[in-house]
Each structure stands twice: as C-alpha cells, then as structure tokens.
Image (cartoon, rainbow, N blue to C red; front, top):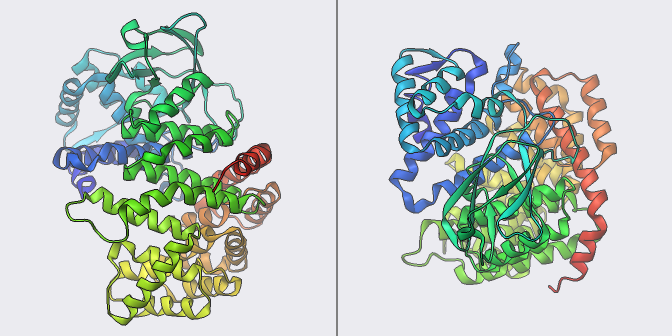
Length: 563
C-alpha cells in the first residue's frame, strides 16, 4: 500500500521520461514505501526486511553477467516487461538508500523537494535527480552515483588486516560475479561504514575508490576491539569478504548477538554468496550458519533459510544430502521448541512469523515430530474440531502432501476446489506440487495448466519445480512437451511466461542440462523471456561449478557434524 501511495509523487507528480528511467518510478516507490512503514511501525524492523527482501534479491540477480544496468535501453515492447525486475525495483531502491545515507537525511530530503518541485506535472531523467541532490548537499552526486546506475553489477570488497598494525587494513575491490569469473571492470566509489565492539552504534566512514588501497581507522575503534565489521547496516551495495581472523571474530559476535540483525543477516548472506562464487569454502559458510543457534530475529532466520535452501537445491542429489537435512533440522529445532505451535499471549508479530517459518521448514526437511503434529492438526482441521491458524496452513498442507500419498493429495486438492478465498486456494495449490510421487507431480502440472486461473498457473509450476530434484526434471520436461500451450496461454507480451521459464530452468546444477535448455530455446524462440533464459543458463552453470568445486568439502563438514 505504501509503495503505491508513493507513486503519487514518484510516477504521477513527476513521471519518468522514458522506460530507461523506470527506476525513478519503481525504485523510489519501493524505498519511500519502506521509509513510510519504518516511521509508522518502527517495531517491525522494516530495514532488516528491506535488506533481506530487496538488497539481497538485487545482488543475487546483479551478480550475473547477464544482468543489466539500472538505466537500461529499451528497444522493443517485448523488453519492457522484462525490466520490471529486481534491478529496477530492488537495486534501484537499494542505491537510493545508499545515496540517502551518503548525503545525510536533511540534504537528501531537501534535494528531493527541489527535484519534485522543479519537475512536477512533467518528466524527468536520472541526471535531474542528481542535479537536485547536488544543489542541496553541495556534493558531486553524479560522480558518486553514475556508475551505480549506468553500469551492470556491483563490487566485492575483500578486507584484510595489515600485519603489525591494529588500525590499518588492506581493501581490494573487484566486480562480484556469482560464477566466480574474473572480468575487467572500472572501480566503484564506495562509502564504507566500519563498526566494532568498541563502537557498535556509530560507524566511521571511509571512501574506497581504487582497485586496492590501504585504509586507516581511528584507534578508538580498533584498539582492543573484539571484532570489526565493514558496511554497517548494509548501506553500501556491495559484498564484503574478510580474512580468516577477522571473519572468525565476527562469527563470535554472531553467537553472542553483539551485532544488529542487519549485520548478522548480511555476514551469512555474503558468506554463502562468496561460497557459490568460489571465493571461500561452502563448509565455512555452513560453519557460520551453525553460529546462529541463539538467533531470535525472524528476518535473519528468513535470510539464512533462503541460503540453506540454495545449498539444498544444489546438493539435493548428493549422497551427503540426508546429513545436510539433519544439519538444518538441528538449527531449527531449538526455535520450534521455544515458540511451539500456538500463539503466545503478548508475543510480537515477528515471533508469530518466525513460528510459521520454522514449522514450515522443519516439515520440508522431514522432521518426524513436526510432521506427526502437523498431521494431527490437519485431521482436527478437516473434522472441524480445531482450525489451523491461517499462517500455518500452507506449512501443514505441504507436510501432509509431502509425507503422504494419493489420498492426501486428493484431500488437499479438494481444499483448493472448495475454498472461497483465493489465498486458501493458492496455499493448497502450492502444497500439491510437493507430493513425492512422480505421477502425482505430473498430475499437479496437468491440473494447473488446465484448471487453474491463468494468473495463478505459475504458483503450481513453481511448486513442482522447487519440490525436489525429481520435481525440477519433471517440470522442465512438462514445459517442453507443452510449450505451445504455455505460449498460447500467456502470449509473447506477458511477464508470466518469463516467470514460468525461470521456474522450470533456474534450479539445475548441471552443465549438460544447461546445454539442453540452450538448445531448446534456440529452436523455440521466446523473446518475452530472452533475458530470463540467459540468467537461468548462467545460474545453472554457476551452480554446476559450485557443486563440483565444493562437493568434497561439504561432505567432510557434514560427516563431522553430530546430528
């Protein structure tokens, strides 16, 4: 709601001049919408959610060579729908948050006032915004921001201590790619905030502009510090890597909850991203994950679970996978035991969200105790004895289908067919795809394409594709076999076709499957999904390299783990 209200100013009062400036509408509405929610409901921790929902999502997409700049040229109508993506919305909002922090709240607000007043009832381009912000702040905003909007990608800053000094650190800057590829790239202007155990609330900012430079922090921040962290509160749109000594100290800070939720979230997020890119070991990322035993924040758990889910997807066919499932269960069980199944009087909304998240994930990772309780509650729900809370229904429906057979699948399908509310229909539809039976997975896909509203088809397809390694293969084959139906149903100009293509192609971790995907779309041109196809191919090949590179290290870590 806040996002759409923000469009009254960013979109309606001042409108982008052309599709190239789409981010001026969508990036600003995303940022301002979150800012409004933060002011109205500070207890929601909206900026932690913003970093997880927008910054992390944008970095995932922008870590691909097939990404695109925020300001992207549009040459055909088919390209328009494809730029309504995480770059225009999420990266756009993220760099606005970055420049707002760089300028300070007062200068940023004054600059926005100049921009809106000068261009009201008219059109604007990106340079108009920089000009207004520069007038207000007396800083060269174009110099700071141009590379962030005109160039694809973002940097990785690798930080290491300088031997013999407690205040000096070496910083290397390079473009981050999830494939681990090394490409020539100009440097970005990074404003890097450092905090430490001696100064955990107030960041000291240093400009990093060169490929490699030595920085010096004040001794009152570093001397005797138990830990030091860069990019405080993730204002900068970059990833951070640390030498082993610095990283291990941060792991200790995670265990003791000495860091803010945003900083705890981003340490693990960067660790898993660097692992997938071959910049550090996945076993090290899993070791960092194990430090979250005392974590209580919903959004931090959400981010960690997302990253563990990526490992789960890539390692799903490995002999070590059951041990990985046991590892995840061991992380989540203490949270489930603390929160239980039922609401606790006076608990926060975020604890309620965390309860549903953990129950859902324990069901997905086949925790026997959780599944038994879920089945019991499902039977009570069907009999009318006790209704399942709305926020737990998908989790329960899914674990019932996942642990059951055709009878359970038919029961949940009946919920879809008889539900009045579309939200309840979607819960049931998404659960159906998680059946362990291959024939029922295919039946789910057939039912989805033939009996589900067009705007909801993607949910059914995604459920099957994300359910398991087998589900991925079946969904991809079904899409190929029914390509003409998907094209005629969604048409060349609809964004849903690109979304479905992403679901059925993006989860693999095999070079041979990447070749199959490439061959198929070469012979079956799909202009509306061209960018999505390129991104999927890159992602699949990166995942294949990740698995090949870290297979043995992950297996060794899991063998040493006591479930």
